[in-house]
Image (cartoon, rainbow, N blue to C red; front, side, top):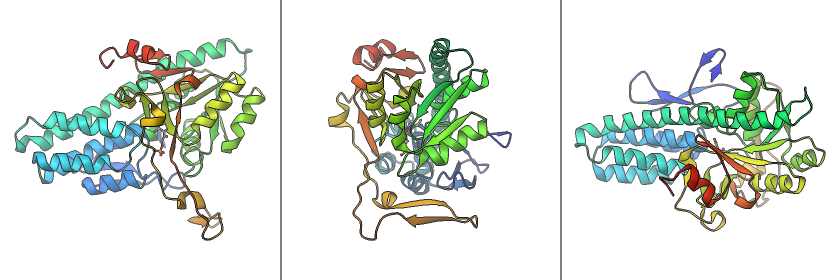
Length: 364
Ligand SMILES: CSC[C@@H](O)[C@@H](O)C(=O)COP(=O)(O)O
């Protein structure tokens, strides 16, 4: 996507040929700052602290992290130790493990002196795969948005509600849930997006609203708790979200609060769709509620909030009384029964074992 007219991906190789560059997402939307990650420890730190975030992007950065680790020590022992270290940075999105496994498989049979090059090549292939995958998700999602538009009075936009950030900055490019929205806007289909602010880290307010604004997509930021009300008033045509892991039976892990949107959508007859790339599918897991690890982050993300002060500086302020205990589960699981359908790079399907098996027979 473009920033000030210049096309960017969310991660790319630095001019030195081995470090990588990212946008520090903890600085957005107040400033757009590139950052260099020089080794696997810096990559792990960036994932842990959410300087990079979003399931596909942490997979891509993890893959490059492993390549950087192999430059220093190409032994199989180091490969396995560093893959485990990177995999532990964030537990819920399966894309991280998928990408690390891909790099491990790609380098294992090479002699030590060839392993780092093979890992960099695989990380680059993962990035290219993500870009093409998300472009196709956009095409299939666009068909769905067109079908919704065709059922609406002429001149009314398709009103989408989204949660968290599943845009280009959460992936290598284009995004997953936002990819159809960008394609709709670019092809002249009228869309309007309700953007959930997504407490506690405000990915909606800080990232989704920033992305959509930069691309010229009409949108309105709402408090997380507004979604049910908007649906009751008939102001939402579709809920469209990304995901961090989809199970064999179609259960969906995504940012905390997604489940409540799905419940409200069900009660109001609003279709609830989830966009995912193949790298988010975890066929080893059947029951999402029982089996998907849910990341528990620091309570300080709940008791505090970061924003810009009138003097332009960015500061973190305390919202709760000193000493208030806070819990911070970062994801929840929406059972397949609440999901109208899945949008993948291979087309749309029901959120069920049969639906996924029809699209991905080789994984079934
Ligand atoms: C294409 S991104 C899909 C998901 O990763 C996204 O919806 C999400 O929940 C991200 O959570 P985050 O904690 O910001 O990494």
